[in-house]
Amino acid sequence: MIASGSIISLPFWMQACNLSSTHTHASSFSPEEQSLLASVTDTIIPPGNAIGALAVGVDKFLQKMLDDCYEQPVRDNVKQQLKALETSAKKTFGQPFEKATQQQRQSLLLKLQTSAAKEEKDFFELVKSETIRGFTTSQQVMEGYLHYKVAPGHYYGCVTIKS
Image (tube, rainbow, N blue to C red; front, side, top):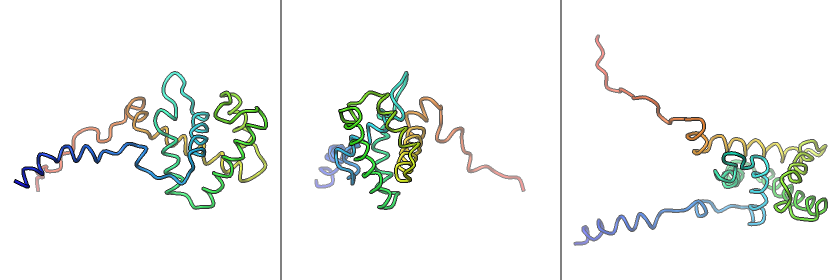
């Protein structure tokens, strides 16, 4: 009786275990930093005729990559540069980075790219390269645009060999 009850409830239990992308990673970034990072990735790869960085979840990828794969000083620099970017947007355009136009956001990021300050330049290069990596290796881009197949063709592992 217990076994049959377990088997009947298994599909409902497994469905309850389904986690959405918002619950899979506890980020060290604050909600404001997450939103700002999403705006930066959206500026680097905006939605054009096809999909953009936000549509494939590059902002979440970037948060997880920074949290799991980079040392604390790099994460601290990213957070510091995000705050500086927000301050610069408010000072230059009188509005937050997220509310600025695409051209205004691009101009702020390009200033970081050509900056003499190593921290600003490192921030821009890191975020740009990881955004591109996250976008080009996303499932939607790999399968939809690059026609990538995980295992093309057949694998014949048990073939008789003449000796």
